[in-house]
Image (cartoon, rainbow, N blue to C red):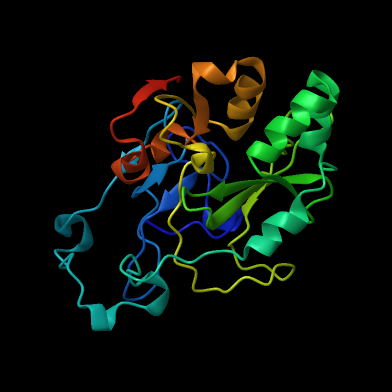
Length: 250
């Protein structure tokens, strides 16, 4: 499947017509897309379309490609060291001036809001004016990446017909000094809060939900974490919670 680089790497789904939601399969030798019928829709619950090609679909071309023939941008870098973002970038981003932070402060009061925004390391991005960075900080305190999203003053996602206001701190961008060959391994949003002293963890999809639930739930009831989307729940992310009580909220 084509790696996500920007909204331009996603097309409309042939099944549900969702814009910028469809990842196509690519030939790792040529870099060319396969027929549009082969791909996966990111709208897992609303659509769920997923059609993987087989040899017979490719004129019996072998599906196994020697590493030496794979284009550099498609080579497996899973065994390389995990790439990290300098912690200074996170610290400098914490201003509470982004639209989402302002909404949380206005809605829940300064003291409660700031306590939660600091816990979850909420930052401000200059990707779009007022945009928010939901940093992914692992249990060791290392910064894996940051999801950049734009909210309005009412706490709603800013969306348009032709463009979704979502990006990543590790994605190469003319305004971001981030290395192109980034070996990303995501962790859960809020993983930095995991501790031996707490046994119960509440798992939700969105970062926004985790923060609002954290503000409205006593600390002794457990810690709220976000996986970023139902399709992003996997064994690797959950390993840090082995032996804990997990409650999932779809």
